[in-house]
View 1: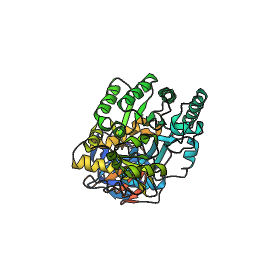
View 2 (view 1 turned 90 degrees about the vertical axis):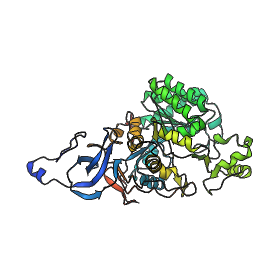
View 3 (view 1 turned 135 degrees about the vertical axis):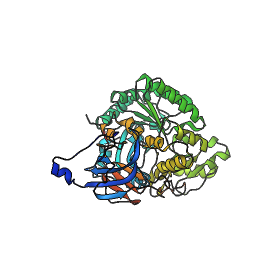
View 4 (view 1 turned 180 degrees about the vertical axis):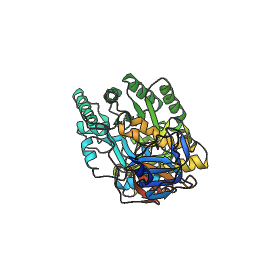
Length: 470
């Protein structure tokens, strides 16, 4: 048997007899093109999985309790999504059919880390994790009754007192002590939070080696102030959905982030591959809605009904609340973000009661199908790296277990996505975001098949992704 020289050899034989009649692997994936973004390996091979670990990658035929013929398919590490709001069964069941095996909520986060993880004890379809969220902590401290990203009053718009800032910092520290993966920020949603407040919490994240994931405000000027604040505190920084935050200035945004990286700053970013965003219509992002020209309202589409809005219906929807899709960017802007060598792919997805955005169910398949296969915008190897090792490396300093994910080599966790490069494609739409992607017949999480011939199984092997607690 020839083991690929670029891969670490793994052997379980303890005697000559044992080696002559090896124990079957739990799962064997045969005849697929195996890709490992860390080593650059991309060749036809057979993968043997045992006890949740990738036990061997070999030219020789392997014996498994369950054998999957992956001829004509790519066998890749499971995709790691750093920006998934839908931390529920409904969302997990869609994203896993898009190849996601680890879904992390790092922008909004939560105000209670222990409770958030306890609510998901017992296993989920995919691996899951969360940040300690500044927006929700701030609302709690300032007695704001708002929810999600929508402060109802002073929690979003008022300046915090020194005593309140002390309490916000205390609660962020508590969340990090309890194993939060990052500190989440939505400064665009909390106009009352001065940059000095954000910078103070960047410093806390830096102390814990936790990246700050921020939905920043203020366009290019906001990017500059955010980069400056993080640099002054030596804080690891992650700019979420650079495509949403930059709009038409996407080239300038990407250049500024690249320049910061070149200067030695620890800053990364992400994109989702759609021209429309989605958020809560009552949020601070739309506080100037009454001043818009009439044509601008039609860019907005209610998630609940799919209807495009005008001035009167926007006002009614603003009063009623709910989610709205914003069609604000060109295809050229999307392509620039996807093609950039510095962007990771992250969905910014979420689904509730059958309503949501197609990025929840189609982000990864769209990149692989449209932008890799159909347009040749980037190579398959580049795309897979954006979906696997790049996001894993962003967090592995804070959560060492991620050093075992995002790779497909011996000894790594058996989180595996098998896709057909000839047919993989997103299928969901802005009207119906519940349509699963095509061309991803098998997904494995921690060694257990969770998508079998395109259907979600009853297995729930997903584990908590959590930083070490103090």
